[in-house]
Each structure stands twice: as structure tokens, then as C-alpha cells.
Image (tube, rainbow, N blue to C red; front, side, top):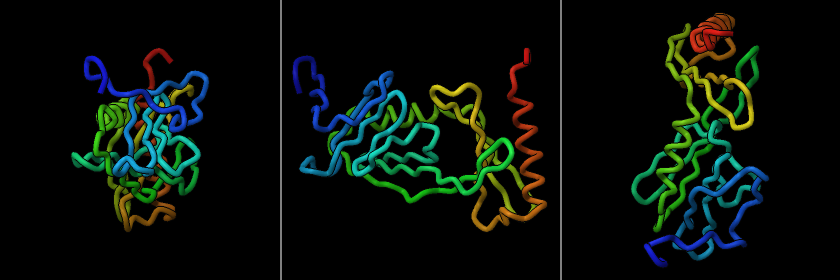
Length: 178
């Protein structure tokens, strides 16, 4: 640690290929600091070791901090429907962070900030969570549905009810002057 307990800067070798308007918010070495890679939180998303691309904040379904490990679960697109995406949990990615700094806080804050609407609804034969997320650089909200395990996602009644629920949520969240 340097003067005033500031963290050292991110080494150029660990810096991901940032977009022109993207800036680093926090970072932490994964593992014991000897080759586990670096997690980098930016204004646009989270860079994980071993990934060539960034996960946008809107793509993270879950982020859990245990006090030593950060586990993130990204959304995987299942299908696209009229006005929304159906997503499922991707494989969780867990990273040991011995010196986490501000990274867990930034991840939580940015994921939370990306959520404009979230509500769990019953559908025939199961349930699902409808969410609207803010995506940097995109006007409006991006809508997703994540069904509970066992819900018959391709059933015509489920699709019709989900379409109705998403339309009602969109109408409820639309600005009054539009």
C-alpha cells in the first residue's frame, strides 16, 4: 500500500482491452496472487480471468460475496421472444479474492443499479422472474424472463401468460409522457 493507503494501480499486463469510454472502477487479483488472473470492474461491466470479453452488468443474474470468494452467475440466452429474452443461469464462476479491495462493493452496486424492474410471477405449471435492466449505451430497458426449474417454458399457455405479464410490466414502467 502506498501513501494514504491507496491500492497500487492495475498493472498494464492485467488491464483488459477497454472501450474508449470505459474506465476501471476496482480490481482484485484472483487466487493467491500468483497467476490466478485479475477481476476488473469497469463502468461497463466485469472482466473475469480467462474470458476474452466483458460481462455487462445487465448480464449478471447473481453476484455473491462470501467474504473471501466472489461467485458470479451470468445469464445465458435460451430464446428470444417478442420484446424480451428468455434466459437461464449460466455456470457460476467463483474467484478467491485475498485482497478484494472495493471490487465486491462495486459489483454489487453496479448489478443492483442495472435493475430497473424485477418481479416474480406465477405462470401455468411454474413461475418466473421478469426483469428490466439498464444497458450502458442503449436507450430504454432490456427485458428478460428467467423461469424457475421445472416450468414448461415452451408450453403455449406459459408463453401467452409470459407475453401478457411482460407487456403489463412494460406498460407499468413506461414514462408517463410517452
